[in-house]
Structure formats: C-alpha cells, structure tokens
Length: 217
Image (cartoon, rainbow, N blue to C red; front, side, top):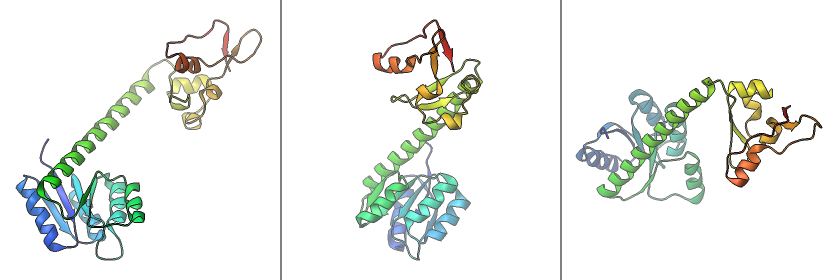
C-alpha cells in the first residue's frame, strides 16, 4: 500500500510531536498537527489526509467527536480516536461516527502501527466495495430484464427501471416493502393470489419458476 498522509489532532503538544515522530519513522507523511476541532476541520479541508488521528478531548468548546462528524460528512475521511479516558456516554457518541479504531494513551509504536494499518486497509476495502456495488448497480439498471432483489426476509432492496415499469412501483417507494406487495401475482383464471416465488426460493433454497397461468397485478 502506498504510504499514507496523516492529520494529527492532539491538544498536548508533546504527545502530538511524539506521534508525528513515530509516524515519520514508520515512513508516513504528516500533513498537519492541530489542537482544536475547528483547526482540524479546516486542515482536513485543505490537505485531504488519508487518515486522521483524533484526540477525543480537545481545547475549546468542540471535542474530537464533533470534529470527526463534520469531516466525515464533508470528506468521508477515516478517523482513529485517541483517548486516555472516556466515560460511557462519550464512547457511545464516538461509536455513532463509526471510527476505524481507538488508541488508548499511552500507546507504543507497535500499537500505533497496527491500528493505523488496520484502519487504512479497512477503509480501502470499503471504498472498493462501494465502487463494486455502484458498478453492479449500473449493470443491473442497464439490462433489458426486470430485476428485483430482496434481503433474506423478502424485503425489496433493489429494483431496476424495467421492474419499475412492469410493477408500477417506483424504486424509492418499493425499498423496504415486502416483495409480495410489490410483485403481486394472481391466478389468471380465478384471480386468487399466488405464493410469491421468492418466498419459496428462500424457504427451499432453490431456483423457483412461475406457474403457467399467472398475472402480475
């Protein structure tokens, strides 16, 4: 992996310099050392770091969790929190920002290296997954067959434009709905509802076809 660029947000200057020295010893680049949430947001906007080491407790009225939330909303930059101590309420707030790791002070170079390498790898895999999902979605939207995908409970997770045209449902309306409501089929002769084939497919773990006399309502 190409060596990453880091932003260190730490209000204790000695600790910040020690982290910077450790990172540079490991071959990484440090694009900035800042001590407040406001400076962290501004520096992230200007330098676009690959990863941010963010102290939870910072000088000023805004803590690292609020700064991380702003940065992630703007840039999607992964964050690893630094903390010596945090109460349960603070930790719960931190979890909501979906950090890529925690480092409990004091930590050594090995802990630092392991945590940031894990965070960088996880972020790279998530980016690749999003790109793959976007690529697959583009393919499914472009083909001429109607496609509806569900979760294991039979709730609609995806519809392509052809499926929208055939069912009369817009994708935004159908998402989360039970497939039986969206893909509503009846017996063509007597009009009685027919069990959704996806229900049988999920139950029997097999490919299931439609019956002969079927209408899609």
